[in-house]
Amino acid sequence: MPSGIYLGRQIMFSLSRLFCSSSGIVYLALLTLLVFLTFTFLTGPVHSIDTQSYSRWADLLISTRFNLDVYFTEIANLPSLRIVFISFVALLKLGFGAYWTTIFVMVNCLSISISGYMLMRILQIDNRGTLEIAFIFLVNILLYERFFWSRYILSDTSFCLISTALLYFLYRSSRRSKYSHLHVILSLGICGVACLYRPTGVVLFPMFVAGLVFSFTKNDRLVVTKLIVLLIPILGMIVLIVWAWYMNSPALWDESKLSRILARAHYWFNEGAVVKKRFHTYLPNPKTALDIFAIEMARLTQYFRFTTPMFSSAHNIVNVISFIPLYSLGLVGIWRVIILLYRHNQPDYIGILSIIFIVSFAVFHSMFLIDYDWRYRLPCYPPIFLLAAGGVTFIRNLVRHPV
Image (cartoon, rainbow, N blue to C red; front, side, top):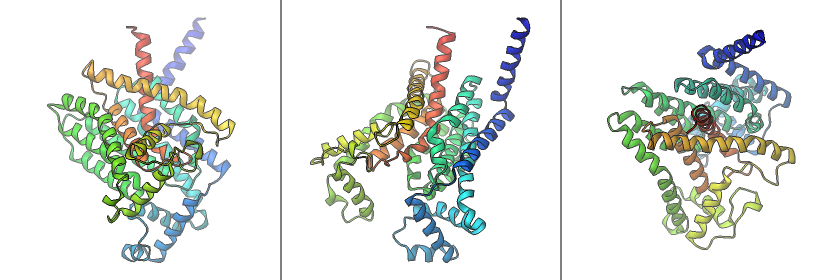
């Protein structure tokens, strides 16, 4: 019996060293990389309609010898907000020829591994325990959605690394007692890269601005933080209400430079589309701004949906098993953020930044459209993981110290 107790203690000590040491989480990140590389090696790269467009645009960029003036002149209809990603694809095609898609998928796996490392490192800096870091590691390698999209030749998975890096540096900056030019420059640079990698990079700016406010306001930081958290749902609703009115008034934007993008958004509203091509989610064609707002609210809830009749039974079952605990812990994590801030005057900055991140993306896609396979939710998984880890912390503390 004593030997069994000793063995158990040794195992717990070894696990603690693995999950709580800097070298330990490097090993965990490498293990994550190995798991995803094995999966993608067995399944192979997957192409989509968007992949064909990216490949064609990359070929055009190569044909112009990376002359952006000529490139944008020849294809004026291509938004410049993807040029970093298209350049990345072009470089892969130049460097690896027919094997560029294999290297692309390997970069996807590396992105998941590095973003997982950043999440675990955030929890280490925040003095969380072994349980929370182990949770982050496990959910990162067990969530089916991460595996599913890692095979695709799309920008979403690597964009997750960029957005997680911004979250990481903003959090590091918020913890510093002195203002750091380096962290601000790094965060601004990451924001710029994100905007030129995917159009949704602009959605990161609310979190970026909040991170700067946390860094600049040292004396009144607590008051400002409470105000920002209070404003998150209020500003979200105001944006959606104003957007519904704006979409219902085409005369205001029909002649603007963004009329093409706005007309596309208006088209999907007129269709009653909630989730693209998932017709069972559609609402009746809107007649008023209030009807458009109803579609926005439906999108806001559908953005977090994880089952659909269009998925296979196995896919739905796996998602139920995965997302119900994940979302439940995430909600507990949000409650923890509120309790710490308003009851104990202890801002949980990583939790607050994660909430701003998720709300920004949910509101943005409520304004425009939700992809038919919920692909546009991918960047939100890292902050959801962090909030869920906060839920684990809350429950653990509640068990140890019952109220």
